[in-house]
Length: 518
Image (cartoon, rainbow, N blue to C red; front, side, top):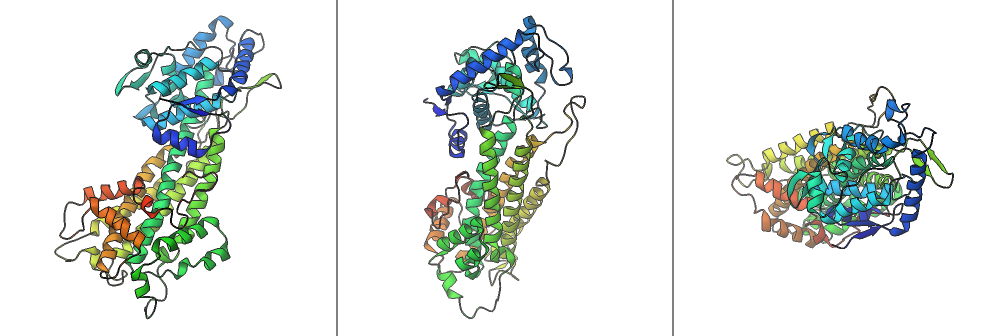
């Protein structure tokens, strides 16, 4: 497999998303090699010196005052890795693990870590040959780096731990051997360089961003279906309204919805003599809410792009100053804040979508749609409990959206006395995105059914193509049937963008900016 060449310090989110989604092999641009080698030489020299340099010839954390003899350097680094392999819980998925490995390459590739180039080459080899370390997903507090998860990655590089290779789980040393790779013997600071850093938290946050962005795009489609289904007014989408406020996301969401709904006979049928003066907020304020979420995700994207290119271990080798200096770049506070912001956006996208679903199934609010969108209510319950399910998922996401960054607990005998909690702040995003996809899947089913009940009036050509595509997988709901598979199919259509792609970029539907994932 040909490798994507990445330049440390200059990698953009579209590249990272390709790496994540397509399992690309990655190679560090060889222009970074001289600085990496020079930093490693400085560390090797320090290891032989008398001056105490943290993590090079000293113990770690609270044990930093313990001086380590030069001949014990290899044992020190190996012990560090093995002792820190304390992760627990479910395994991190393969795609996110590979992204984490790439982020570690980018960090080491900045030439400030003092890790030999051979170590980077082994990570490259693992990515190319498909050796994936088994990373337990729990155990990091997001300060002094993601120590436990990254230690499990590093363990495979020294022939320990566990890895997956060719679809089988096996000891790390066996995986390397089967792939034709040789474990490294860690030199001065190399163990510390591998496990200090925010790469686990950042990888999880990036994946959360990538998926949330896709779902934000999908809400343009599902919200448009819902608006036509309940014969909602499109006057609140007029560009003049949104230009008077000025928020970019709001302006673009309104423009996208106008384009997607253009040509709807349903809309034209009730422009005059409609007794309703205003629609509920979940219809009228869609651009304001979704647009705010889009703007928030864009801000997060900028933060995570910076973090993906950062050197985040400790100590750092300052080549020009000829110093090795202890600092705190491993503290994942920016990532924790980013994860909290993504969580807020996910929760709000789901909250307003759930209210649109509730509107469509309620005969008191749906403007003459049959109760629960079934042609024979009473004998059939239709979408009654599907709506209840979305309420449960919405509520779960509200709980999960509580901030993690405001939590902290002292660790490591009070040496690491303020931590970010970025790791579990980022990990929860996977669950939240799955919940949101299910909510939007139900909205898709309800919106399509509502529009079909408006026949012979037709929706817009673009929304008609979406409903046609949906019906290839999920037939109309007549009499009640086992609904769970329909809900999952609809959620998958939302997650994979198969329906969004039918809109052909209508109304600038790809909402990405310079830094946003597309």
